[in-house]
Amino acid sequence: EAGVAQSPRYKIIEKRQSVAFWCNPISGHATLYWYQQILGQGPKLLIQFQNNGVVDDSQLPKDRFSAERLKGVDSTLKIQPAKLEDSAVYLCASSSIRDRGPYGYTFGSGTRLTVV
Amino acid sequence: AQRVTQPEKLLSVFKGAPVELKCNYSYSGSPELFWYVQYSRQRLQLLLRHISRESIKGFTADLNKGETSFHLKKPFAQEEDSAMYYCALGTNAGKSTFGDGTTLTVKP
Image (cartoon, rainbow over all chains, first blue to last red; front, top):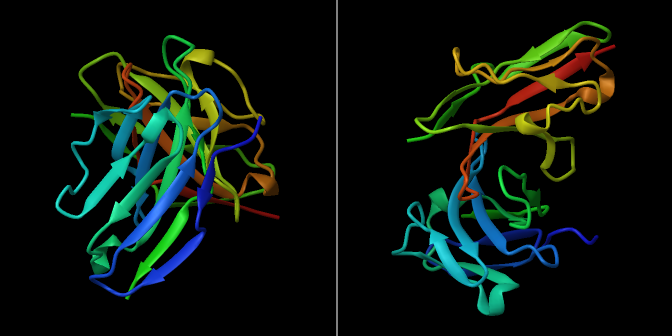
């Protein structure tokens, strides 16, 4: 099966500019996640979608970050305006809900954002 | 609240030596534990899940609820095991909390 696709791979912007990231999950995976990974730290969940509904966005800085998943497939994550501390790798992951119980994620290759 | 602690940022062993990557967790519910691995220039990928009780690439991990630990072990490390390893704690809702990772270096 095809993996989780993310674009762009790299992005450099100036602070106060806006940026958007795109993710295409594995076909049939109902659950999609956006994680932020700051250098030297583990991934931190920003938002979780089930189909096109938000399950958990408690750690999403909603004053500047937004995300959507139209039609329950692709998703975009936007930052507006960006701050220096937003420099990180943004990871998209998807998982299937077909199996009850614990399951792992399939990750995309990530987008490395540098805010200067 | 969920928390995952990986006490070692860096771990270095010689080829053929045993290796153990530590993971401790805190969670009030029934834990679901995972190990993920990221090789150089590759994406983060699932290594193993505690519920599967499987051995992947010679690695095993046992959930110890008394000590709230899920350490990853391999009896004989190989150079190709050099990578970043993350322990993660999952919930039935699908959300996972990750530790900050351990960089394993296996020296020849």
